[in-house]
Image (cartoon, rainbow, N blue to C red):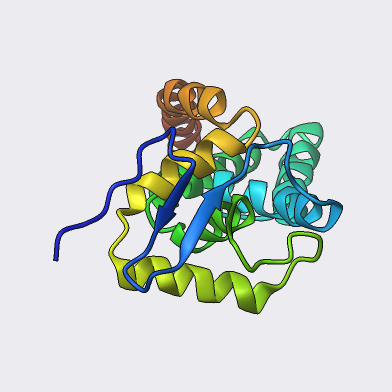
Length: 174
């Protein structure tokens, strides 16, 4: 079976099961869908929710204030490493985010229904839609993600240098 590719400007498509979906614009969300979108953005961008990111950054900040730069660097490195290593594994939040904007003709777009979202995702899976189409849509819907991913790739090498320096300092003290 050949994969179905959705173009970035796709307005609607029909799956192999005969169901037609339409692609909404970013400003076409109900309040309920918008609240889901807010929750899914950090999961798509970082593979984590805002609470865990905030908690880890607060721990790093405390270590910096306590003069424990190496401990802070490890936490920050782990956050960056989680972004880099898990980016291809996060299909579920990506698909859920897309499901907020890709709607069926019979869908009640005023109230979020998780079970309905899962059925849509299963329909897409069974139809053989290329995952790249969903990543492109999801990443375009997460505010600032493309700029941030570019910065992360540039800063990852800088963070590695900090980690190497911290490790060599620790080794010299031992």
